Amino acid sequence: MTNAGLELSLPDEVRARVAAKAGSLKINRSEKIVGFCPSANMHKCWPHERFAELGNKLIKDGCTKILLFGSSSDKQKCRIIADAINSTSGSSMAIDMSGIFPCSRPQL
View 1 (cartoon, rainbow, N blue to C red):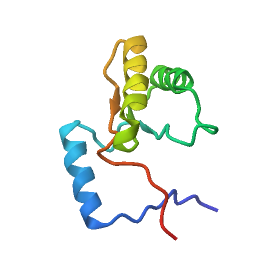
View 2 (view 1 turned 180 degrees about the horizontal axis):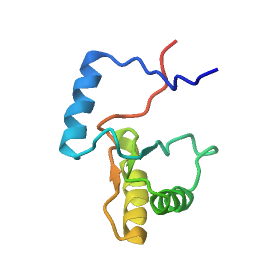
View 3 (view 1 turned 90 degrees about the vertical axis):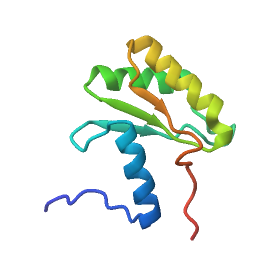
View 4 (view 1 turned 60 degrees about the horizontal axis):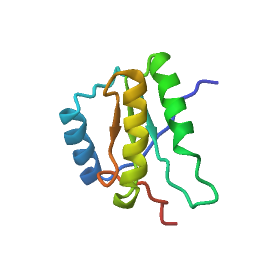
C-alpha cells in the first residue's frame, strides 16, 4: 500500500494569498517547513516555552522555516514564540503569520 500523503482542498482565493505570501518570504517547495498554531482555550494551551523548545529542535534537525499561525488576537503569543526561537537559534527562521492566515475550525 502506498501513502499518497495529505490532501487539502483550498479555495482559489486562499491559494493566491498563500502563493503571494510564500513568494515574499522566499519559500520554495523543497524546504522543510513546519507550521505551529499555538492557540487553544486556556486549559489546553501548550506553554510558549515548549513551542520554542520544539522549534529549536526542529531547526537543529534541518527545518528551514517555522511559521506561526493564529488570529490577530494571538499576535502576542506568536511573536513571543517566534522571538524565542530566533533568539536561541541565532536566525530568523521563525515567522509570525498571525492574523494573515488565521487558524479556524472548519464549518461542518
